[in-house]
Length: 154
Image: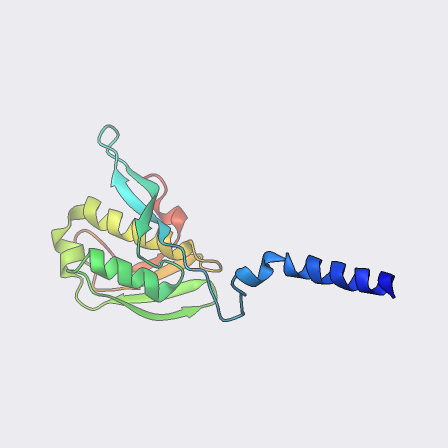
């Protein structure tokens, strides 16, 4: 009887010292959201005149989905209204209704930097390898299907 009582008291002591009750229980619905996200940013190297891609951390943006990336791009480029159409297989389809600013006012380097950043960020998502941009061709940019390799050597 004393042995049974000792085992019972020991068990109660062990279970009461377990600190798991103080920790929040994760459920399938709970998702930990990071406060900052890495994004690709095109920068112009002053000494070489070439576009380089850098990963930078940004606060309060979500680049984990195509619509999230489109929102970031549109906020940073208010003169270009990028519209998400669909994703099919490994290609994201986008449209720019009025591409005048992109094709006529940003210059060739500005348009290249915009498109390179866009393609790098969208192809960072798993399964996306190409970005198809539909817009009216202009002096500094043309529509088409692009991958990261499309911008090699810029």
